[in-house]
Amino acid sequence: MDATTKAIDEPIKKEGGKEEPTAKPAAKTEAPPALRIAFKSTETAVPLSMKPPLDALVKQINRNDAARVTVIAYAAAVDGQAGMSRRISLSRALSVRAYLIDAGVSTMRINVQAEGDRNPGGDPDRVDLFIQDSDISKP
Image: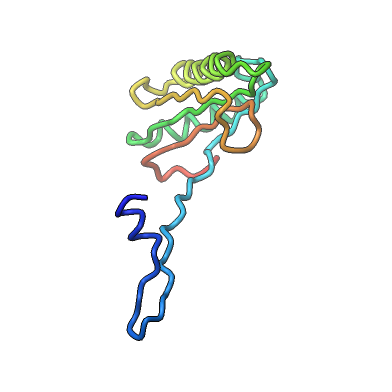
C-alpha cells in the first residue's frame, strides 16, 4: 500500500484519541447508454429491428454539432477463445459505425471500442452507444 492509499484508508484521529472513519471516495457513476443493441450469438450485422431507433438517435446527434458518439461492443466468449469474441465485437462496432456514417454522422464524431468478452454486466452480445457533450437525452 502506497502513502496515498494509506492516507485514504486510515481513520482520522480526533482529539481525545477517538478514531473516525474517513469518507470513501464517491463511486464513479456511468450514465446508461443512449441506445443498446442486442445481437444474436455470432451475428455482426445491425439487426433490422434496431434501424428505426438508430435513425432517431442519428437525428438527435445531428441536431447538436458538439455531440460525439462512443460505440462500445461486446461479445460472449466463443469456446473460451478471447480472440474470437474480440473479433466479433469489433465487427459489430464497425457495423454500427458504418450505419451511423451512412446516415450522416461524421467519422470524426464516432469513437469505437471493441471489448470482446470483457463485459461489465448485462447481455454479453450487445453494442452500447453513448452520447457525449450533449443536451441530448435518451431517445
